[in-house]
Image 1 (cartoon, rainbow, N blue to C red):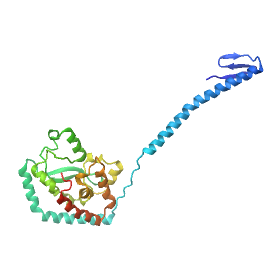
Image 2: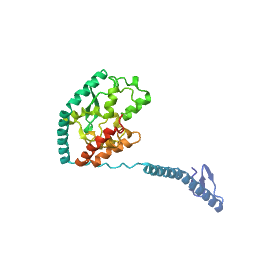
Image 3: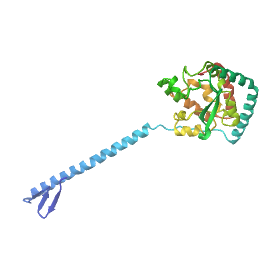
Image 4: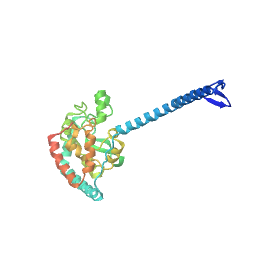
Length: 282
């Protein structure tokens, strides 16, 4: 930056000492120095001003693109929770007694159809993030999980890990396909309900990998209630609603703001025709 200093009648302009030969020359020197100072100020301020301007635009852009998190209200108090648990115990115990003959028939069918355990224990995430094991009649070959690359292509494996559902899954046995179509493979979950790890109605019990499809806020709300044997997704969407489209998340979370004793009863009664119609069953 150019500078000037007045020293008696001489002027230091840049690195040259200018003699004061006339008043007119003095005025010219002052005028030139003033112009240089103005230019220097502009050069120093302009980049700063530009940075502030760009920063402001960036902040406005982030605010504009920020998606507002929709508030999720979880309904149901202590009275509801008490009667819900009473209903779970009584209904699951009665159903286990009444369907004991069916349990025996299905267990034999699974045992004779393929090698492996009759009941499959699937690790899921329960209330408050606690790990639980959900019981099902085994519908796949014994090494379906341990040797997954043997049966699925990379694309199928990726979809399975995301959705836990797969069209024409080659690991499913013939008996298993029938059990899945009729949802009879989930009958052992009545024991989960009796023991208190599941409820009759609630969000679907999901795996740790499936949790990644929800935001941290949604996860907190979803895991604040006990998962269920049936629920909003099973009745209104089932396999037709996927994580990829976002419909699965929406339906799972929709139950939280609607749940109540009468709404639970409604979902239970709607589950029966949904199962009979085999809506979205895979």
